Length: 64
Image (tube, rainbow, N blue to C red; front, side):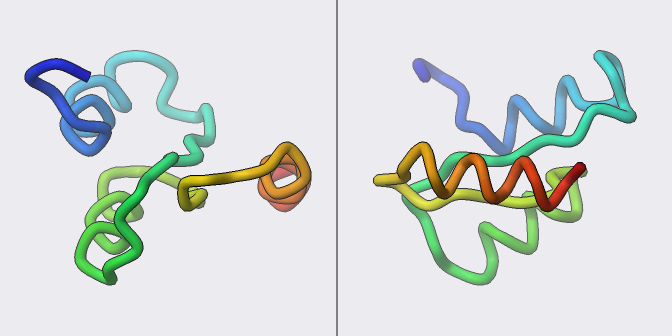
């Protein structure tokens, strides 16, 4: 995304859009700092790139 990263989008829009909607972050960064930051900003889970449809399905089912 030009000029923005996923954490910035999550921070800027999570509260203003639909705060009860669970967010699954898609990231290429598996470091603890990035994951911790995403969770603190409201993400409920995350997927590492490259991801599969099966992985996404499991993450969605965990949230339901």
